[in-house]
Length: 293
Image (cartoon, rainbow, N blue to C red; front, side):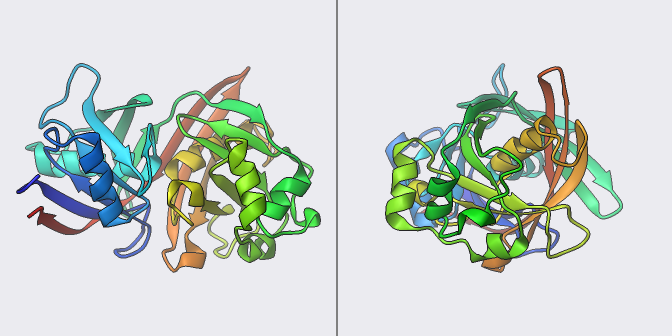
C-alpha cells in the first residue's frame, strides 16, 4: 500500500470545489478488496476508485469503485473522474475516447470541447425498469406529504448498472424540504431501494431543466452532490414517460445545491421502440494529489 499515488478531482462541476469529490488511486492492483474498502472509508467521499493496472485489458481500463460502506458495480462521477485521471496521468496525450472495465461491464467515455472547455461523456447501459413502492411509503421515507409527489408519473426502480428509486416531485420546495426518515427509509431499503433519487422540473437556475437530490444513507452516502449513474436512469425515465413531451432530450440537471456543492450534469437521451440511447456528461477539475504512507 505504501507509495501508491492518488488524485482528488471534482466531477460534474463548472468551477473548482463544487460538484462531487472523487479520490482516484493509481496502480492499485496490489491492493485487495478489504484495503480498498478501508481507503474509501478513510477518504469518505461518495466514492473512491482504484485503477488496477497501468494499461488497459481487452475490455478497457480495469477499475473498481467503492463507497465508504460497499463496493458498487457502476457509478457515474467515478467513471468520468477516473477517465480524466487516466487520460492526463497515464497516457502521453488525451485520447478522443477510452473505455473503463467496470463490474457492470465496459463503459465508454469520450472527450469533447465546447465554448466553456472540456466536456466528458459516458454512454450508459440499457436501462431496466421495475415498479416502485406506493406513494405513501415513499413520501414517508422522504418526510414529505403524499401531495408533494407528482402522481402524473410513476415511481420506478431504474438501473443502468446501479439501481435507484426514481421519484418525481411536484415542486422545488418539496425537493428542498425532503429529509431521510429512519424507519420509513429502512422499510424501503428492505425492499432493495437503498438509493432514492428525486427530482422536479422546478429549478433554482433557469438555465437548467431539472433540480435533483439523491439519498443513499444505506450505502454510506447520506446525500450525494452529483450522481451520474442516477442521472442516466433519470434520462431513460424522462424519455420513456415523455416527461417533457418528447422521446428525445438534451438538457442539464442541477444537483448538490442544498449541500453547497452545486453541480451540473448534461443529459442526452432518446427512446425508440424500447431501445434507449443514454449519455451523461460533465466537467472534471483536478484539486489535489498525494501518496499513501
